Amino acid sequence: MPALIVSFLALLLVLWLLGQPYLSAARRQRIRQRPFPDAWRRVLQGLPCAAELPPELQARLQGHIQVFIADKAFIGCQGLVMNDEIRITIAAQACLLILGSSSAHYQNLREILVYPDSFVVEHEHTDSIGVEHHSRQVLAGESWERGQVVLSWHDTLAGATRTDDGYNVVIHEFAHQLDQEAGSANGAPRLPRREHYTRWSKVLGAEFERLCRVASRHEPSLFDDYGASDPAEFFAVISEAFFEQPQRMLTEHPELYRELKFFYRLDPASWLGASTLTSSQ
Image 1 (cartoon, rainbow, N blue to C red):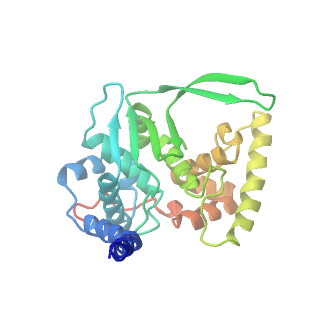
Image 2: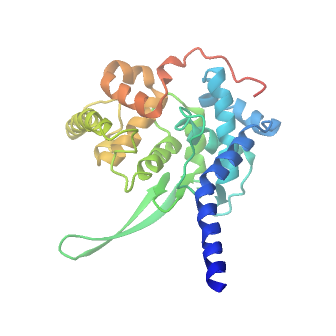
Image 3: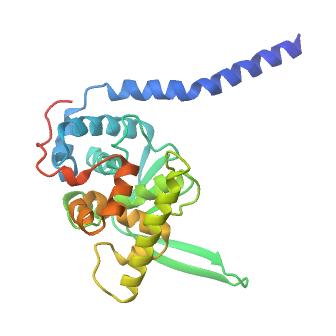
């Protein structure tokens, strides 16, 4: 009898584990169908990144925001008091990256830590000959593989209100999160099929080398020189340009634009002239 009970309990556990993805998907769908709160809408109406979207994408963004806020914990640091403005401003920008899907979400992300301004991070690493190195960096954002994003509220707000300069710390760090869903960030996020990586590697590899050459000569470029640091930073930097300067990117780097259009399943170069934020979902 005890063996039967153990087997029955094990079966229930397996069934529960198998059913979790479906239960989670159903829960998120119910959240998307809720009315969008008026207080949240007022914050959203003040964000150009939302107002520039076509109406159907505005409605999808609102649904994604609702799921994002329900799923993720927001934690204020150094005395920052969390409120709707902070949550919606961050969620709206983060959800731009997953707007091409009606059901996508950041599956590995658990919490967002928000500092009032730039924050100091201490890093330690051991080099190839065993020498330990310690460094301190002042950052506006950071993405961690263990399910956390750290942001400066000052820089987040600046990125939300200025949408044409190619700099957006939220887009940058959440591009890293997408990259990290396939493992350590390396500039090759999860693509639909294995054969897609061949074209991705060819196009992004050539563009990365091009940016490295331009940066080494201190020549002007659409992309921030920081993108020449490594392929992971390159992917994050070009994602900023894709959403903030899409027409210029399409003109100057058409193949790269097409790769990001394929990955994000969005065409931000076509958003100019979109209607203002709709008043109802």
